[in-house]
Length: 322
Ligand code: UDP
Image (cartoon, rainbow, N blue to C red):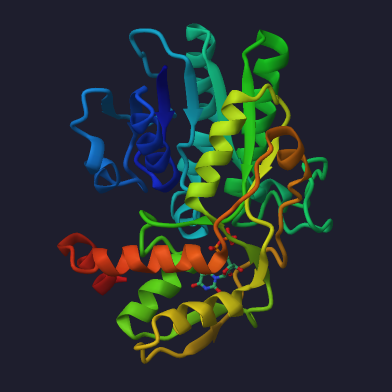
């Protein structure tokens, strides 16, 4: 297959690239590198089946040759990143999705949108099934991401209904693993970075808010199955093992037992969702998929990777800078 992936140098995108290269497919990776890094694709950048194009998909792009899939993963995705790049986030969710859908339509390719559990906002239904319409503040700071992705879903469904483009939508819940940026601001890499530096672990609010963390390899397998399915409606992908954020911080500290860190409570960000857990009934039934890697296994693998990277000059600098 020949696959175009936007955001291919990001955390999830680069893991997908790795999987497709291993499967023998040809990849065109498009990324403007505002939050992705070339280091993420360095292991396969010189592979003959891999091509990198530095481009912002919010502007039109012409791709020569046929395509079987267009996977749209480009977007700042951590709260820190989308608060820093609010306009770019709105543009890539709207214009970027439009351009990516246009490429899929022109090539007769299957299109997959990486949407998010953020479309559920601060949910009033728990756990969240795909049928829940969400509870989003459109004008709050997180609105730039939440509404961009909600618009992207609407646009994707319009291309499916109006133009007959063969589309898929995944709603990705919190995911973690190697290749996250230590300074991307998300809970898991932030706590690991702080513990590695011996600094306090910054828990926002009282830490009772919950999330359910999925290890990256499980997510990649779920995405692979959605690609091969004929599901046009959104599908939740994530891990249902729900934990409080305080517990996550305590676990990271327990793993890095040599650390001198302690927990420091900070104000809860505006509109921070109080709870989040995917209802995976649809994915289980339709894809025969569910996550296999436990939180403890995933944390051990991720911490080992970050420790190894700490010896690497680029990441060592990132750790020091914070
Ligand atoms: N969080 C925290 N300390 C941090 C970073 C995040 O307590 O240094 C909390 C954040 O307020 C949220 C949860 O951890 O309740 C998950 O945040 P993250 O940024 O990882 O993702 P989100 O699910 O909010 O998009």
